[in-house]
Length: 252
Image 1: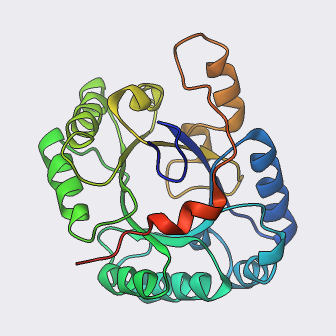
Image 2: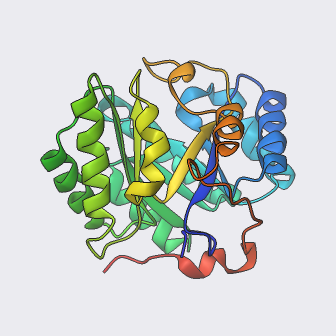
């Protein structure tokens, strides 16, 4: 059972842009390809382009989540972006798991009957033990899914996140997602076999934090990988949109 569908592994797309036209063109292309949901990265957009994207809510083609990974002095901006998304009718909001207002964002989503997720994003490696603890920490807010995306500087860094993802996928909590930045992104191809529930495919061209979009998987990458039998999931199916809201996990 997947997150929004019955598929064991789902493809989601990450989109953003400097103009509404860029965002909508990416969104159309990714739905045509066969993703299950779209993640709109508000923190990689200007306030103006983000507001315009929300105004075009009627043009969205399926479940759209808004993500803002601001922490510290950007925590308030993350909360406002998620609040605006919920008001506009987004399926849910995703913030950094270490955002100082994560619990408030979770309450906002729950009160509105929308999905919440808190993801850990880091440009530094994470050990297997720390990753397992992070997955456990995220479970406290009972999110739609738990996620860790971290940079791997070595083979051992990549294996650590793979091992933690595998372990935590069997801990009885909500689904887990593992993602690797950097030149060891080969580990992303192995993540579905390790129990990672989602592959996020990058559709936008704006620089993604420090690493650059060329260090993450794109739709073109997925197309090539899927041509190699039994290497990468090939299922593309339309989700049961009408029942997605029934899966909202409320906090205790």
